[in-house]
Image (cartoon, rainbow, N blue to C red):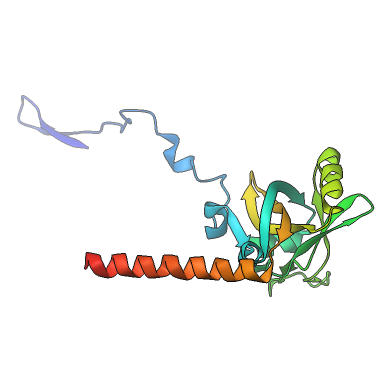
Length: 192
């Protein structure tokens, strides 16, 4: 709205329609269709098996899909999972994770009864599974789950072909770790 004084001295009110100078940017629409991001999905990592690096030497690493139920995926998004006691077994030419504990949410549906230690099937190509079976049958080799992570909206499990460490190897690992820690402390105190 704008006021003008005419040549005769009368006051006139002129209404101008508000026209945008440019087309509205769809920036305000950019977050409408996206799922809310979660801390676990941002980093990609869901859970790590830190105990595995202490107990095993890793020969090869593989990525496998997991067959999960809906409540398990929701619990994984919240980070309610424990991988420490998990191990992989071969049954009838298929791979299964045993001991992977996914704790159900309190808001889980009442029409299902969640089993937190359910055996979960791993999905890999048949040729990879056959090669792993051949290696596992060798003395001293086993399959160990290393971590769970998100990849393209799906949960993946990193599995390692591993060989067990002897007791003296574990002591060496501890000794190396403590040595590194002492060096870091010395460097930190020196820099002060």
